[in-house]
Amino acid sequence: MHTSVHLLASAPDQLLPARELMAFTLASHIILVPLGVALPLITLVMHYRGLRHKDATALLLARRWSAVMAVQFAVGVVTGTVLSFEFGLLWPGLMGRWGDVFGIGFGVEAWAFFLEAVLIAIYLYGWRRLKPRAHFLLGLPLPAAALLGAFGILAANSWMNTPQGFSLDAAGDPTDVNIWKAIFTPMFGPQYWHFVVAMLLTAGYMVAGVYAVGWLRGRRDRYHRLGFTVPFTIAAVATPVQFVLGDAIARSVFHKQPVKFAAMEIVWKTDTRVPEYLFGRLHSDGSISGGIKIPLLDSVLAGFSPNTEVVGLTSVPPDQRPTAVQATIAHWAFDIMVLIGSALVLLALWYRLVWLRHRRLPGSAWFYRSAACAGLASVVAVECGWIATEVGRQPWIVYQNMRVAEAVTATRSSTLWIMLGLVIVVYVFIFGSLLAVLLKLRTRWRLADAQHAPGPPVDLPETDSPYGPRGPVPAGDGGVAASQGDRS
Image (cartoon, rainbow, N blue to C red; front, side):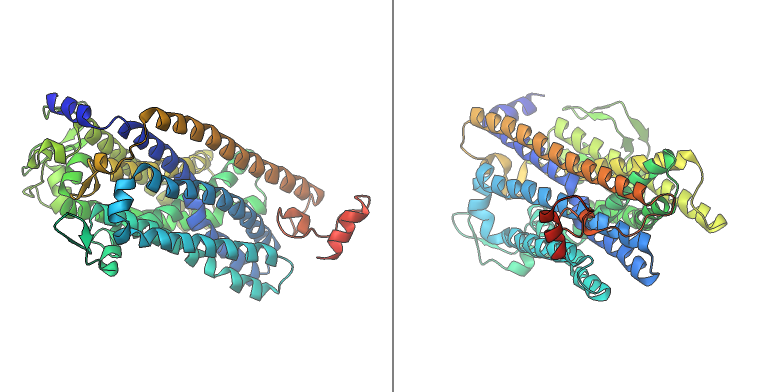
């Protein structure tokens, strides 16, 4: 206990507000990341289905999803840019000393954002203006651009977890930088693929959840069935893959970052035959209260044998490891992520079994209730994954090379708290505006669909899109609008 108090007392006053500001903006941005990374692919799958089967309903869904993709991308660029500025403003020690080593990742992400913005604009404009095949082919680079952005940010983060590709001079500054080694660190592969598949299944469940709610409210036409089936199938296929990748990345952490693994599993002393705790709280004297203790399981999971030695937190001095509170936070985040992942595997298995036996969607209302919750649960799992990654690395901002306290800004803590308050207000406005736009689009689409009842939804005029020149409008809307439609 005295050690933890001493570490907190020695930390700069501005460290806590800087952390809180970074945590809030990062947690907010992550909500948008799954759609930014994976919605282009899901949209193109639906687009391909529409072209392949000459399915107007599938094309309508793809066009509407592309509008949502553009709106959330615009907001994501704003929140992502704020994060980029915060790296320099809040952590000048990190960027000043190490920017030349790992900054290439942020450069790659910036170029990917620019490329993705151009491609989204072309894809949106191409509806009903380009030949179907040419339009689809112009959209194909979109998922690659999204993955390139993820590549850049994951390269930077994995370097912070397992830094390499440099030497240190007499003053402790990096020199002889090898960019390729700095990008492809030991944790890059496990982190990247774990992240990409997480984005794919999260976006799939988020999109499918909208149509699951529609099913529960009685909207069971082909439009809602197709809108549910395609993204949910993609997510259901990705879920067991993610479970395997999650086990692989946990094993990579065990080998490459043993102290972080000890924090995530609240292991106090290095030992064999280590038990697994589901939840529980670690205290500063090494004792654990609460939770469910499963004998031997931690050693078995780490090395497939109860005799596997698991490194404990006390293997390093107190100032080189997470505190008991930080370890408990990382542990709970990790357990919640695993719990949600396990539930999603069961949901995907339910879906697959019904499909294999009956060649139809499940009919149970409980399935659709679960599917409606799966999107939110997936976002929570993504948030928990980042919490486990970042909190488990404490006190290091660059693992074993720079502490967070060494990198923090010298700006007064009161100023940082004011900045946090302002950012919260601005973000409430931004996300409120995003929600308002999405609800407006939903209302517009429902009114358009109602005009075509009782038949299935068909392709609608270009007025259905919030971007690009307007198409023909009904008579009586004025000559200006009509002249705009003539340019379509």
